Amino acid sequence: MNTLTLWLARLLCLVGALIIGLYGWFWYTYQSPYGYTPPAAMEQSADGPHPVFVYGTLRSPWVRWLVTGERLESTPALLPGYRREGLDLEVDRDDQVAGQLLAVDSETLAELDRYERLGVRYERVRLTLARGAEVWAYRLLEQ
Image (tube, rainbow, N blue to C red):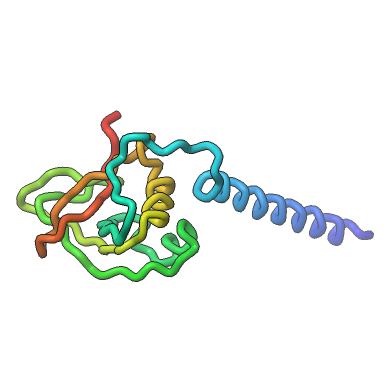
């Protein structure tokens, strides 16, 4: 083997290892039954659909598919009385946050909770959209 071929083979192995490592991290973090325990006292009815307002990465159909393995339909929605501040919602009576409204079953809601690290990073709270619908939304926990 010449030097170029050897270098390309090593590069290909490195890229392959990186892809496998990223996939493993994604699976462990967002899909596996390990490394995350949901809060015990989270209000949730056994049946769905559960309306969920999303305003960050979950607005993307690709992210929703990666997290849930499903193609979740969404509709545009507005949340009055809040403004988006980084990864969180801050109360602001004069503003509103544009996002997407999802309708999910209990199993999918649990997958979204895991993605948002419910009880670790975010809390799930009830809020009211501009059209009057009561929905779940994720807010950062106080640090």
